[in-house]
Length: 218
Image (cartoon, rainbow, N blue to C red):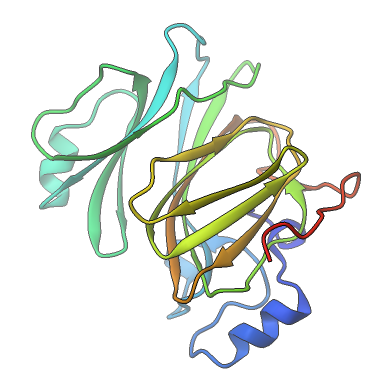
């Protein structure tokens, strides 16, 4: 859900977004520093090169918050990234199930994450903000994608069916290569933290024209 082809909004979604100030309607997932006041869309908040990772022990996405960036920086592990998103300071870490940082507030642990076979792995972190009815084009990633919805709700359709996630639900994730389409649902803005744990040598996402959704998330 990162590139212009894979996060382009449909005409109906563009129409829905057009009435909102600062709506991102061109579909490009852009760096946080370039958002220029836009509120809707996908924004890349960080990328960390992790090198070669082993699948044992299973790896998880650990999500913690801190009062200040300085405190989060002091708690960083070798596979941790400090991110400022949605008005909070987050410490995102890829590590085994029992990993815990010093201090902070634990928000969620998502996983175990399916690990793509690759010589080098990158963790790409994003925030996704959709209005109800906004959808992505059908796409896939060269690695697992995971979400934690903080506000509102979303629906993910894949060939395996649909999966819903609402604020307060556990994290949601899918394996690499799976074609998908994401829809903002409910009656209000959906705000989610997003991770792609990918082969670092490949594009973050590509179109998936070989699969047609059945519209299960309407």
